[in-house]
Length: 305
Length: 109
Image (cartoon, rainbow over all chains, first blue to last red; front, top):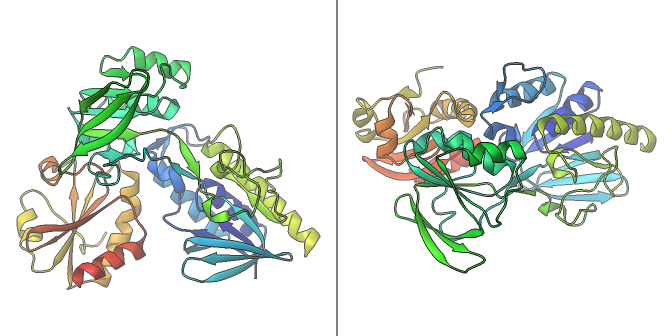
């Protein structure tokens, strides 16, 4: 039996694993994809302290992984389908049927970009539909593209994309932005950016790649078509809590509710990082959550086993 | 890096990929792409496991923009599978090794 099973290998999970493994707890981290989480979709990380000149997101993730495994964290590739609690023992089951028993569990499953859920979105993924401007922006040199959304990510990435694209439409369903003021000012003064207010995308059309967006104005119901070769979707995130099936309490947006020690409503089950209900989702706050959850799990094990 | 994954350019693409008698996997990548750095060692491992049955190649999209645009690359890493000069399938983004293995196995039939 493991002392701690950590679900999710982003900064929160890797930090939790570093602390528990270094604290001599038998620790296993389960990751369904590649370790690093959303950090790996960011080109440069400039706001994580200690890297004064910035660092590649993927490199930061690899460093975190090496640091944790150096102290004995085991990492297994697998997708968790179920977690059950029998008495004080937690049983974590993978899609493959493999089961792991643990005294405590730390959920660091993060969040994933929300989809538009319109026709053409899946069909043209990687052929013009993108959720990562830093990954894909360079393939739209001199072309027309659209960004969907009005929050910080949408505006920041739209400004970034003007480095490549000839024209960047920002399609937002309201008539004002949620993004912070400094970003709004930069966007409004950028001659390559044009706003399409009060509008939603209804369809992504194309042949071998994206060619146009079908857009509807939500106030006038007027429909129009915009010629673009790419569309970048930044309409927020959804937490990866679907597989938990009532294991612990969630907030109204399905994020895990914790106390200040990262404890969820299920005894011995902790949460860390973007999956947790909290105001600021950053690498810097994720690693703090991971460390707190690790020490809380250690205390829980001492008191209960 | 070993030579198992051959770096190809617009000049050598036809010979190395399109005229390859084997199934060919081409990794479209660039130096600034984080996920590409994650997938590269995976491709390297696969190239050893499938040595002789699958041809592995990589295309730097910054140095070969014409190839990138010819194949409609709109995001990297894009892993494109070729057989007899035709595109059979593609995978966009860094995906786990197991997923790539099953894709290769299914394409090998």
